[in-house]
Amino acid sequence: MPVQNNQIFVRTTGKTEIVDLTPQISREVKESSVVNGAVTVFVPGSTAAITTIEFESGVINDLRKAIDRMAPEDVYYEHNERWGDGNGYAHVRAAMIGPSLHIPIVEGKMTLGTWQQIVLLDFDNRPRSRRIVVQIS
Image 1 (cartoon, rainbow, N blue to C red):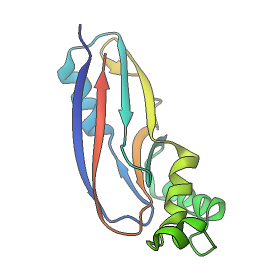
Image 2: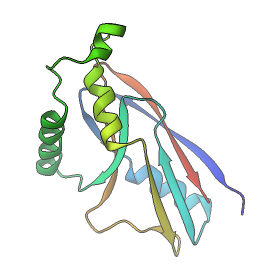
Image 3: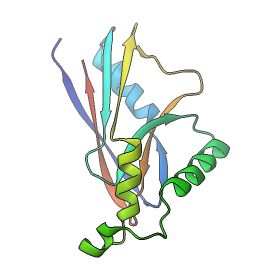
Image 4: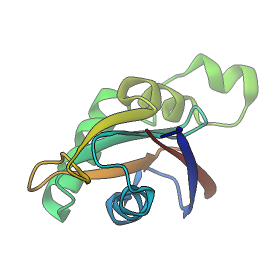
């Protein structure tokens, strides 16, 4: 079966918004008819990331706080001097977490844990329209 390329579009507010993508990606996997393979989820751009987490308000808040400690918004970033857009922290945060995930598909389902969801993290300092590439093979 050839590689299938799909896209999901998400409007975000930025500022470490965390969006659960699991329902959309699960739907893409189901519609693909792939029984055993993998799905890769990728966000183009350098101020957003993809990861997994339990999508529950407590742990989401904990994650936001941890990210704030790792790459605070209110410290000096050389990027801001060069471009003047004030989002140097967003680039650093996105680089630390990464732009993609690769999830095995076994018997037609993603091998996510019981409390594991796929999330988009948008770190930019303004609203964005994010394109998520979903590649299934």
